[in-house]
Amino acid sequence: MSKIKSKPGRTPRLWPPDILYLSKPVISTYITTQDLELLNTSSSNTPSIRQTTGPCARVKIAPIHNSNHPAKGQNGLFATLHLEAGTFLLFYLGFVHGKADTDPNSDYDLSLDRELGIGIDATKMGNEGRFINDYRGITSTGPNCEFKEVWVEIGKGLTEKRMAIYVLPTGKSGKRAQGIEKGEEILVSYGKGFWNERNSDRNHNKTEVLRGTTTSSP
Image (tube, rainbow, N blue to C red; front, side, top):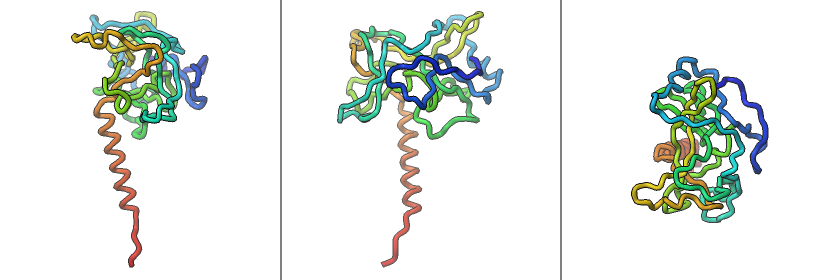
């Protein structure tokens, strides 16, 4: 991973002007060289994929107008063509950081290595992956995509650990064999940990508000 900031280039339609669009990760200077070596070391039988650059032609950012959608008025990510089960879509890119510069208020922080305490935060910079919504409240059939650890070939025999987004595989039952249809929203599971932490923060904030409320004597 390079510690040189990525330069803005071609961006997808509807990309927010205040967010830096990335084609590769931006690395925090707080992450040591030793931790980077540990992060990017994979076993000999670990599959690797080639680097890709954006924008991704398989997906598009689009506004959500459905009044029943929990993200109504915001944007989501949608398929621009039929996507077969098991298809690689894109990487989840952002600011790769350690514990020292974690933003506790971020809604875009995805763990890259829990043991090393390294994550990917797409709050201020990233790619189309930052627009993927959680399936909860949208569909009863569950997510149609998943996050997977991958190692990317970056040249000179080096690999780099990243998180990638894949269409869910067919599965033993075969119920996901159809993949994702054109125009369908890309949905993942953020995981129970994300929502437990979100609910914990909301309850904490509610408690703080109540503590600061005063009532006048009759």
